[in-house]
Image (cartoon, rainbow, N blue to C red; front, side, top):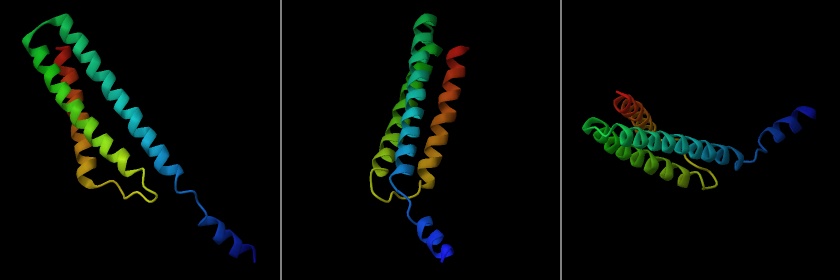
Length: 109
């Protein structure tokens, strides 16, 4: 009889907790990307070179792309049973992250 109750309790999980934690993780990541973009602008303003300004423009574009992806994903997490992360969203997130790092290197050079 104890085994039956253990099985029943294993299915009684609050589905709202995991999407909330994931949504908060997306917000933290978006905040980190925003900080990187702001620091890139600050560095470009100090350098005042054409390469730095181009890097800032690219950083802003990448930041906006990531912001769009993150916002869409956060919206899908508001449903009661959110779908799994699609492959194209994961790929877009990874590409934005790598491009943001490349922009940071461009600004620093």
